[in-house]
Length: 160
Image (cartoon, rainbow, N blue to C red):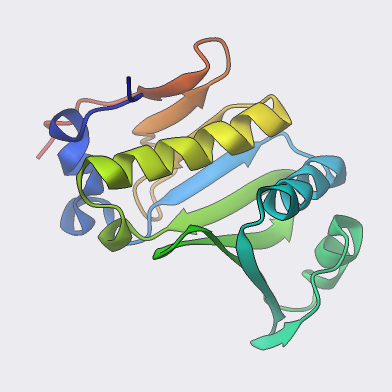
């Protein structure tokens, strides 16, 4: 059984309401948590590309990536599935921030892809992973809940 059903969450997947790149975040993280995410990407065999100031370079260890990101625009692009891009932004060690493109996540298959991603990260870190509308961290809509071991709704999907 899926964590969420398309008919229940379709408004949260509307780029006009949420922005096309809603924000996902794991708070209270460390360099070790970032390394766990990098290790997850490798262990799952997900395609990825790391860049600094727009130039593709080899994916470093998390400690080096975070040190460099203070002076550069460090981005990790990950494709957990064909046609599904996730962009991790290495702003700081204390939070893991990433964007998903809602235009790539339509229908039940899209909901399932997003839930699998949030679950994989949340389980690996043992922490909740929250999704909010683009640039609106005060209004979370979905979260991987550790205790429930699933993605849950945090807001009324009929807000529009």
